[in-house]
Length: 151
Image (cartoon, rainbow, N blue to C red; front, side):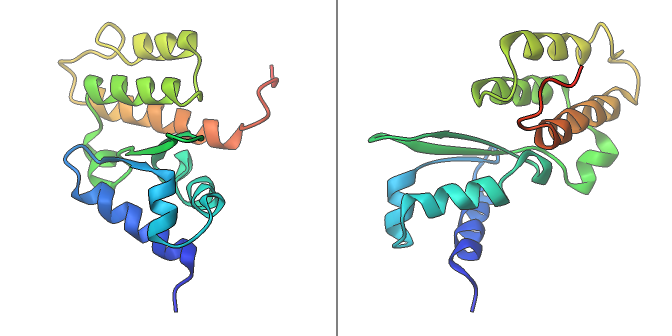
């Protein structure tokens, strides 16, 4: 029999897969009621199963009107081969900023680095290089969590 965490994870991943834009926004309390568990169980699943290194950006707000927003970052094999567009990168950076993983300044700097002036849109490699840079940023965010004074 699968654990409660496994069932919650599967449920959320199905919702994300069925959505048009690979994201889902849901009330934490509604999800807890659906699975007949404490909201802290939902928080645990988000913290352990929907991480940046797993290819997800999670925004969470606690309280009476608390919600969970989970957005899938393209880490599938197709994205690795073809890369991501400038628009996809900008949306991901905005989500990282909104979730508190990046400051406004960091998001701005990365947007400029990943933009057309640096990555030539005529090049076949631009989308792939953009993906690799953003993927590394996502991995570093996860690895460096709580260790920001490294320089």
